[in-house]
Image (cartoon, rainbow, N blue to C red):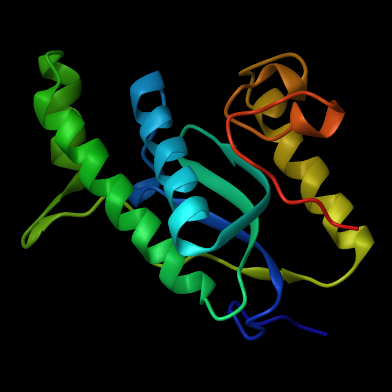
Length: 176
């Protein structure tokens, strides 16, 4: 059965990808990754975002998430993207590293202003424990595959540490 890339089930748990415009390698600086973490934490506290797993990679972010009852996940994700975009673009403008600033400003500049994120979220509803395990393993394995760390739990911008009993940067929901 083919799946549509839509948020059809308001109570569903989804694997989503938030990609930076043109898949630009932007999350190379701790400052930018911290902005993303802070905006995710804000959405958890104030907008009803429930995160089961997450990982910030160089050009994109993966989440396994859902919204609290009465909330709509696409709206929450839109707000996260908006606030993250504003925070990172403001940081880029203040960046003292002239060449990086010029390069990033050029990458995100469009006629009507700046656009940091690609449109859409590429959602896939997770419908079974096997699918959940598959997505969890993939999300946590990516920093190793990209050569950022040797073990998934070493990467601090991911929920892998939480899944071996440690404490990561974001509060997680657990599936029974």
